[in-house]
Image (tube, rainbow, N blue to C red):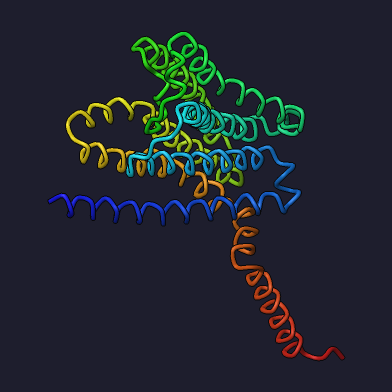
Length: 318
């Protein structure tokens, strides 16, 4: 029945909004934690992590708006949708590229510890971030240039249900995009695989006291590789979603809902897991802000109580 289908769609949408709000709250809390501590703002590792949080939060918000438009078949001005699509494409590529930069930073820290301080400087950090943004702009730039040759003036005054593929009106545009995405993926996956192999070699040679941190770095690279795979699969989603739309709207909505959870939300849950929970230094500060300072206050009270009890039980010195 139509009423049952509509009820299920609305229920899913409500659940999804709750999940999105929770994720955005966690990411904002982590960004606040990063900004409050100078030690984090001066560390390349945490600076790249903060960039990932910003990109992921922005992309979750934009993707959720796009999904809302599809659910309710909301039409917006074509020109506004084009700007929306360009930002989404750039942010989708920014996330895996930043992950690659984070893997390289771990490679330098573990495999070249003596040179890490010389390499990881504010200057190299700025250059790295600029390169990531410039490389990410290649695909959106292609979209703008190709659309200038394809789009007619009448398109600029139409209203459409917005999606990331709205600017691709010719098949050759999708073909060139696929070539660029494959080039992105092969290059990024190759770099992550290289860092994994080198860190694994370093783990075998590491002394007993360094093995723990080395293996932790290895697991971090593996998680980043998983993030990369899930993120890049997102690029092929529009193609089978379009095929599903030709079958039925219900099938299209179901697939779009599943894709949003698996390929948009899931990869962006891993960044808080990798650095927000597994990183003891960051997690300690994060926990304090999450509990509005209660954790530190309780810890201090417990410490003072222990000191007093020890002072009472300590025998008098003659």
